[in-house]
Image (cartoon, rainbow, N blue to C red):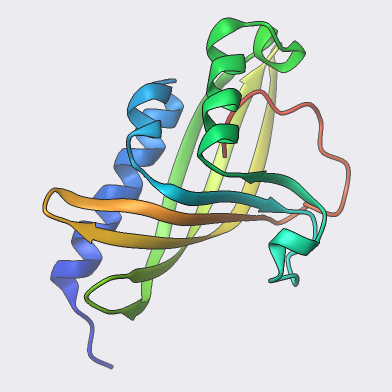
Length: 160
C-alpha cells in the first residue's frame, strides 16, 4: 500500500474546513468551495449510483445550493426557524483515486445536532470528487450516504 500522505493531509484539511464552515453557518464561504457544475447529493438509497434518475433527499446544482442557503439565512423556511447547533466529526479519510484533474475521497462523518434540547446524531459515509486548484480544491460532487437514509428523518435545518 502506497499512501500519498501529503495529499491525504491536504484533502483532510479541506474537508475539515468545509465542516467548520457548515457548523458555524458560514454558508456564503461554503458556496465558494463549489465548482459551478458541482452536485450536492443526499440519496435515499445508499446502494443507488444513478442519482439523477432516482429519489434523493437532495440533488442540488449551483442554483439549488444558493436557494437552500438563502432559505437557511433568511429564516423563511420552517426548518430554518428552528435551526439548531451542529458539530461535525470527520474521520477515516481515504483517497480512492487521484488524477491531475480529480481526487476522489471517501470519509466518515458524524453530525450531531442540538435543537430544542434534543441531541440527534446523523452518521454518514461521505464521497467527494474534488478538483485540484492553485488554492486547494473545489467540490465537483459531494454524496452524503446517511446510515439511516431509508428510515424516518426529522425536519433537517442544516446542510450535511
